[in-house]
Length: 380
Image (cartoon, rainbow, N blue to C red; front, side):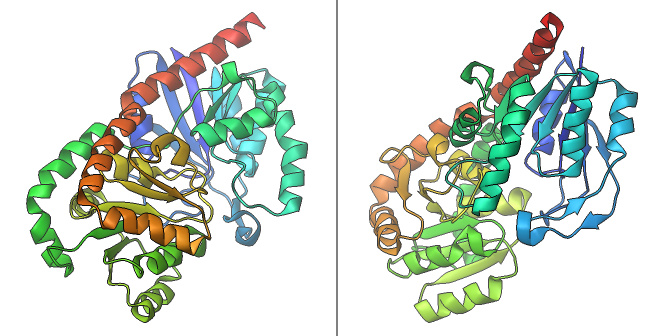
């Protein structure tokens, strides 16, 4: 049995159940180690069925620089020394916990795999790009393998020297089969769900979901919906909610703000919707895209969404629009809003495209990647 430490910033609601599946594998003894209970996500993860350790330490404010604060957790060093893991899976390089874990792996000659969500389409200041060019090749050169979330993240890590044969896709995903089956059941209540939300039964509903913060681009989606005959359904909360509400009224875009939803309460909204849109200006991946595709919705995504090359095949299950191009965004949305047959065909194809991102195949790929890392380290 391979003793694996999965080291990341915080428990993610989408990752915890996926790690449960991995931990149930007979060849893996998994421990998840987090720098903090929460760094930037307001929603709590479900209770895990695998071993989880949450480190405690003071927070250094760094939101303006890194979009999250920095927990100081030097206790990860003695924890790793005590546990004697066979392999580390390290998420990111910007946290003290992941930096210490990497150095610990170097000094103790324990193999590590790098988790990676970042991609080259994300806008970044020049100084961050310079730091990445200086730091990441050092991490890549000594890594035993790489676990990017998708195509763009894989291309990005390979640009720093990662050999393609050592790269295994490990997406942030959902239980694809379960989501699809439950949404199909809930569609029987579609009109009732809409009535509870105050949405007309005959409306074409464009749904989006996520934190209501500027880079999620909900303002772009409101502007596009205002050019169509659609009704917008916004799922989530955040600091710009009041501005978005005011914009929707001023633009004349019929909009329902449903607040934060999870579980069946969220799946009901997929069942009540006709199109899913994510108009982010910056999005490393976007697990909500997997969820929407599993729910059988056609997609309209901006080219900044990290999951777009993997979950969107333009002309087959949705449309790709440029971030910041209001005319193209409105035109893409209008095409789907005005064509029910196209929506139905795209929705069926979305579900097919989502299937390889289910828990079972991606968990198997993860286990095979850590097994290769341990075998490679033994040969070394």
